[in-house]
Amino acid sequence: MGIEGGNFNKHINKSEVHKEEPEKITFPHGEYGLNLYEKEYGSDKKEIEKVKEIFDTFLNQEIENIQIYSSEKFGVSMPYTKINMGDFAKALYEKSTGKKIGPLKEPIGEDNKKHISNEFVFPGAPLNFELLDNGPFHFVGESMKQCIGKLPNAFEKIKKGKEPDDFEVFTLGTPMNEFGKISPEFFEKFKKNPTEVMSEVFVEFINKNSESKINKDTKLNIELYGISWGGGTAAITGEKLLETNKFTQDPEKTKKDGTPRVAIKAQNPVSLSRAKIKGPQIWLGSPLNDTVSGDQYGPTIGKSNPEFAKQVELKLEKRGIVVNKSEEQQKMKKKAMIDIIISFRKGLKLKPETKITEIYGLHDLTTRTSSLMREVKKQKENHPNSLGQNLAKPQRENSRVFGVDMFHETPWFRKNELDRIKNAVEKLIELENNK
Image (cartoon, rainbow, N blue to C red; front, side, top):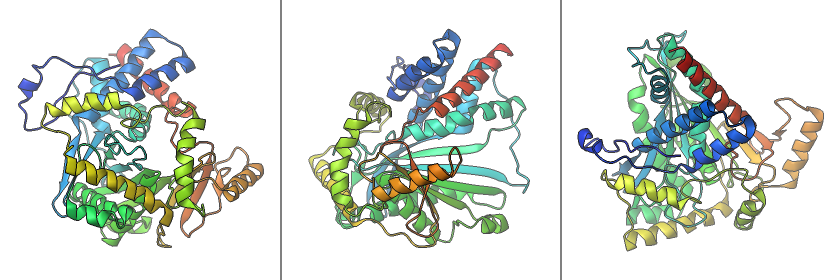
């Protein structure tokens, strides 16, 4: 499964870019998802064609949107990418119908405001100590899950002459990635408290991204989502955003004056877990997780797929986005990665008023505790087949804690996700048949 090259750099002449021979990139998530789709629903030619179309369009837009964010204040730069739900849906709609989409009406809510939703996906810890880690595709499965699930609704809105929901997912990298850069000043601060310092950079990024979206005519909702180290970083970033008083977790305040609302969702946040010996459990549990979990989770891009990362690297190089592998940078980046792992033993302490949803894999050897297992087992016995069957007792105020049947990584292509892909495929086929 591959895509044709797109325009990655706004400073490059577009006509020159399109004269290049199209190059193919093998998308590990797409290949894996396609294989599981065939196992679940069979290999109908038309359906498989549409599945490929969805994955190829998704990857094309993700790669086109890769950028480098530079912070003068912190002396760092880091890669990130984003996908806009409207652009994604429109590209698929036009390809299936063969029709160019004309002007669409902006959707306005009952409060006469345009509703905007942004999700920021935080990277996990670079446990392999590779510069490929912490890139813009580290947890790209979350972007796929959110956007593909919203496709049928988006198609219906376009069909009725309305803009799809204004929804974007940003997948963040860090300065430790091969495309990032660390200043000596940042390095000195970072090694003392990696999560705290990194969150300050993310706060600046989110603030700058949100500035133009905060006005009297819009209602902005933000979700911060992270797995592993990213879960703790999302939580601390959320707290720092709230400290600016530009954001809130109070729905009444959002309703009253339009202050953007922040939701925090942390999955297997190792530094927030109830484990008493966080450091040793993480160091011992992480490699064992990979051994016992098998292949049910699919590929982690840029970590276990260096070939994919290299293909992306070559494309970006042609557009002026190049890796930063000087000896000095490599030395600081790898030391910073070690500092992240060491910091886990300290844990994180959130403010009592911080609202957060924590999700723990019951089989995750880096966060697993007997108390969590007992609580979820009892909950399932008392509330089987209900939304509350996975609830556990929170260890802090304003937290919701769930224990679910998984290891550390997220199984992006669970049955319900495959069903969402199936729904999107059926809608595309319907559009094509009625064009």
